[in-house]
Structures are given as structure tokens and as C-alpha cells.
Image (cartoon, rainbow, N blue to C red; front, side):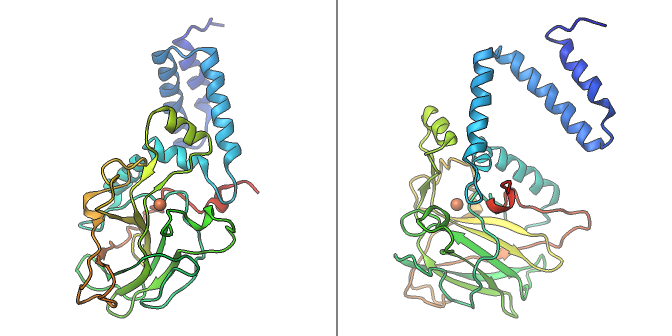
Length: 301
Ligand SMILES: [Fe+2]
């Protein structure tokens, strides 16, 4: 047997994994080991640092619950979620479909269903605004019966999952477009918010001297039969953190500014945003575009 040194150990691990029958698993794990070992050599990782990393990841796992996903938050703050999103977009986004954004850790399945123009503020109070427009296909035609899911913070910058009774859904809902692809949502003006800073990810962000704040935004997930699911968000342009999002989710085309007196608004006296979303036909091989999930579907039972 050959004695291993700090370089040959990498090849020895890869050689032992060569029996992996799933070719994609083999490719991913080979690359992971090469980069992980290369990283450890580059920073000359010490035993103490190795243990600190193990302890950190252990705390990240322990902070996860059915209503909190600390690993998604870690991925988001490291820019990994945005990177996966950008790569998926360049591989699959067709034509001039609306740009995507992060699903984030606060999406929940089975949110309440609302009718055209109804408010998603079931309990929360605060200044109101309206979001309306159409869901269009690549030809610019309205897509009828598209499901428009929306979720956001209340006017204090908190999601329902972070409030006292997370069993109650608030500030989220599902709408269906009408025959012309129109949707209208009455809501509260969202507030920018700090990512959860009371866990290991917050601790790291603080040690890095980062503010940990996301600019105010409204999450959207739009789906229709035969179309590629669109995961995106609209960002309020006057937010002080619009250029320094902690999770790197903002694109210029997704920045909006509510205006009062907008004639086409279903409630013109309220600050309103008109935004037409463009969705693309789904390619046969296309899989989910969601970089994220309902935390309850990720957590171990
Ligand atoms: Fe968010």
C-alpha cells in the first residue's frame, strides 16, 4: 500500500468513490472532494478550525425546525442560492421571461386563496398598497387561470412564521388570473427586514461586519399549466438597502416604486404598482426552478 501525503489523499478518496453507480452522484462528489481538499490546503486548515466548522454546521442543523430553515439562510447569505438561481436561469429561462429571484426561507405551501383585488392582510395592520397587472406568455398574450402566489412581511418587517402564532397564515395568499391574465392584490407596504440574527448564521454575518438586512420586497411564485414556474420578487426602489441585499436577490428589472393616482389600479387612491410578469413554456426536460422550499417539507420529522 502507498503512504498517503497531503496531495495523494485526494486521489485516494476519489479512487474509492469510483464505484458509485449513479453517474451524477459520482461527478458531484468527485468535484466536491477536489474542491474541499483544495480549499483546506489553500487556507491551511487547522484542527481547531476544522472543529469550529463542525460545531458551526451542527448549530445550523440544530437551528432548523419545520418553520425555520437555517441551512437555506446560510446558502442565501453565502450567495450560493443566487448562484444556483442564476445558473438555472441561464440554462432554462426562455426569451424575455421575467427575471427570477430567491424563494427564501419563508415560503409556505397551501396559503389562503383570494379573489381578484382582495387583501392578503388577514390580521396585520399598516399602510396599504396594491399590486396589479397581467401574467403574459412569450407572445405577450394573457395567461388565464395562472396561480399567483404572494408572500411578504407585514408593515413591521416580520413574516407570519416569525410572529407569536406561526400556525396562523398571514400576509400570504394565492390568486388566479382572469380570462385576460389579469391579477390584482391588495396588501400592506412591506418593510425591509433583518434576516434572523439569533442563530449561527446571524452570528457569522455579525462577525463579518455585514448589516444583515434585506430591502423591502414582495415574493411571487407564478405557475400555469404547461409553463415554467416563475419564482421571483419585486423590490421597493426607495429602500436604503436596495444596493446591499444580504442575500443578493435584487435585479434592476424587479425594482418598483408604488405610485398613487395610477388610473388602471383597482384602487387608484392607494399606492399601486403595475407589473406584468412574463412566463415561458416549459421545456420537456425542465425541472423545478425553486431554490428553496417550505421549511416543513425540508425538516426531518
Ligand atoms: Fe423575503
